[in-house]
Amino acid sequence: MTTTELKEQYFKFFEDRGHSRLPSYPLIPENDPTALFTTAGMHPLIPYLMGENHPAGTRLVDVQKCIRTGDIDEVGDDTHLTLLEMLGNWSLGDYYKKEAIEWSFEFLTQELKISVEKIYITCFEGDQDVPRDEESAQIWQEKGILADHIFFLGKKDNFWGPVGQEGPCGPDTEIFYYVGQGEWNGSTCPGDDSGDFVEIWNNVFMGYQRKAGREPGQFEYLEMKQKNVDTGMGVERAVAVLDGYSDVYRIDSIWELVETVMNVLKVPEGDFEEFYQDHKKSLRILVDHLRAATFILGDERGVTPSNLDQGYILRRLIRRAVRHAKKLEIPQDVCISSYLGKATIDLMSGSYPELERNRKFIIDELFKEEEKFEKTLERGLKEFEKLERVTGQDAFMLFSTYGFPLELTEELSEDKGLKIDKLAFAEEFKKHQDLSRKGGEKRFKGGLGDDSEMSKKYHTATHLLHQALKEVLGDHVEQKGSNITAERLRFDFSHPEKLTDEEKQKVEELVNQKISEALPITIEELTVDEAKASGAIGLFSDRYGDKVKVYSMGEYSKEICGGPHVKNTKDLGKFKIKKEKASSSGVRRIKAILE
Ligand code: ATP
Ligand code: MG
Picture 1 (cartoon, rainbow, N blue to C red):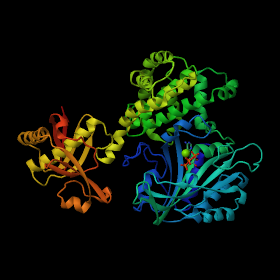
Picture 2: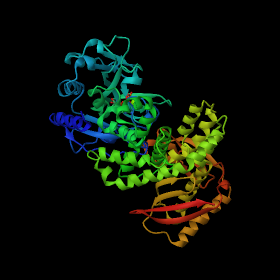
Picture 3: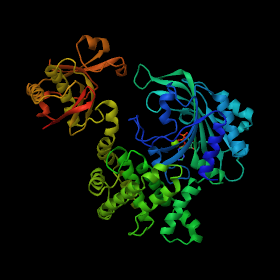
Picture 4: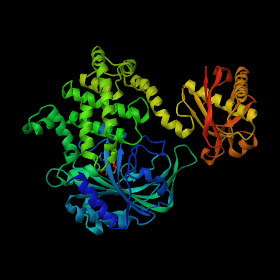
């Protein structure tokens, strides 16, 4: 069976049952700065799962391209890919457990003709938050699933979500396919690490909403008025088991990539099987990572390899792949990245036309990144060879000078049986990872993704700027947005027209005056009402929770904020406005630096 056949069958089945088909959303979430990539079919649908009306109705079906960075370490095993296609059917407050389970059962046994003997099920065993899901188990049994094929597991296995700390979540029921040797003897169970079962489909019954409780780390589970169904079927896994494999690399559209590599290596066709068995791990990582990289590059957002956010994931995928290409002894003159990029586009652009549209961009970027890495890889490896143990600084040096991502150094160390100072290693890298993550977090928290000394300074300077703008331009000035990096601050505020040079100069002078006054910065925790009464400015929205932090810069500025800040304004240096321009209608944007 091909992936296209499975997808078409799935769409037809659910369209016949009143579902509207949606297109695949981008890999890079549009409006969710908390996540670098779309990780599941439900991810782009969160607003609708939260109750917003979907224009296409209450029954939806689609296939979503997903990237799971959390699974990168698993890649090399039989079932985890970095890029996967996920089929899903949804009920937005429409049908619930009964229909969902019955249709899953019918699709598997009647459409795909899987024998019930092969199907195993897990359900949620219940805990203090949410009761045991007997109902689902019973529906499965009524349809014909054997009683001893149904297992109850805890929250770790059979409860889904929420995506962040809060949000929709609920018990799920997972469908496994038995791939073990001979008949099942009862000693293994779905979800264990025996390898006897492959999870192919998950039905989530999103009937709860998790909310932060009064104590930190404590949560409440509230039953939702609108109960939803969210399902996810891994296309690659489903096709693999239907073809009789537990190995996802055996499906047509991935095996061709494995063959592409073996052809480059001039492995005789008769030896493919043996070669694959002997070099499984490197072949799988090489193919998986470049397949994922091709999709990231092909997404309309146009991400390129870098040391930040999605670009950093992309860089790591390509570099790790290139390293495994070396292990496989791919000849120096072959650019394996663009080779596999082309092959991936040829195989997948039928379903994902954006790959074809961006063909040149994808191939060029793969080529450039591989070339860039090639230049330093050999020298870096030489440097690595000299090491007898790998300190945090060594690992950091390999990263910053030779562009070795963390896992590459880790893998090299493992191969050589070298001891690594993991703790120091992690610390050095954390600095970089914080940097690479901060973009995403900052967008969300309004400037607080990173708490380096420099960003603290910019944050404090933002308060002074805010107050100075109010004084110079008038009380109508309100913060509309803020974004801080270690290099500059950016502040958006309401004001109808361009600032004159004189106004800009006044603002600058005022801020610098307050810096030179060496105002101490103090913090109080107040309720929202107390904060308002105290005259604090800032965004008084509910999202701050019951208590808010109010920062004061001497007597000059008092503002609600999450922090962190420096202790005294004298630490800030010289404040300078670099740019002032329109951000949107009625909103101006200032970029400023500290010198
Ligand atoms: P596992 O425990 O095997 O990692 P999961 O619990 O993370 O799976 P879900 O989040 O429920 O999986 O995702 C829905 C479906 O997507 C799974 O049933 C599976 O078929 C598929 N899937 C999940 N992760 C991967 C992956 N890394 N590669 C391929 N398919 C996957
Ligand atoms: Mg998983």
